[in-house]
Amino acid sequence: MDVTPPLHLQSTALEPEAAAGAPRPVDLERAARAVRELLVALGEEPARDGLRETPERVARALAEMTGGMREDAGRHLARTFEEASDELVVVRDIQFHSLCEHHLLPFSGVAHVAYLPAGGRVVGLSKLARTVDVFARRPQVQERMTAQIADAIVEHLGADAVGVMLESEHLCMKVRGVRQPSSSMVTTAWRGRWKFDSGRRAEVAPLLRGAGPR
Ligand code: ZN
Image 1 (cartoon, rainbow, N blue to C red):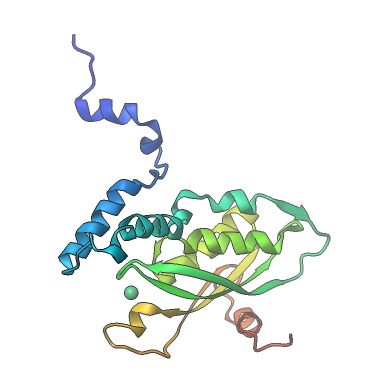
Image 2 (cartoon, protein in one colour):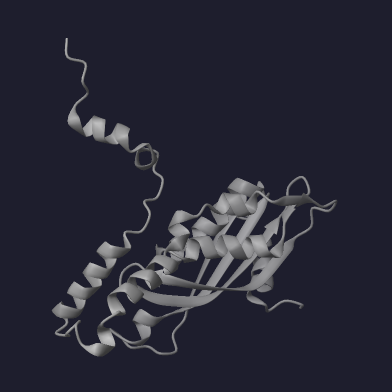
């Protein structure tokens, strides 16, 4: 009896990382080839002086700007420490730069995070900033990014309640299409106890926005 698995299963077996859903490393050469091709499609001459090294530069820049795809937020949020109180924690104005997945143009802004620690488990300020960064540096839509940050804090910190607010400006809204240079976008995500408690949300939202006592 022939026990050799079908070819597609063999190739999966040879790539255990891909099979486990691990992110592939960036193929910089392929990305650079694609950028060179894009320049040609736009009517440019990639061989001219100013553009000669542009494909490689763009490939490296995009690899950096999507580096969050190859990072795990759980690694940052695992570094918790014990705090006696279970009082509200609010961290405001965490700057981020992301990449709109519809146009591959940047959107930038600030994230505000509030959570109620459970069992005294809290994280340092820098770990929350790293978490925002992990979800920002990838092709994104702002609504999903907001939800992913909130979900990661629930999952890895076990917080009782989480609120995340993102305020950002999208370059794709400014330089193309409707050309709205001063428009901004605000998204929120509520988890845990606050998800269905509109009263508490109404108290926490001004703290996130910075409208409350500072
Ligand atoms: Zn866009």
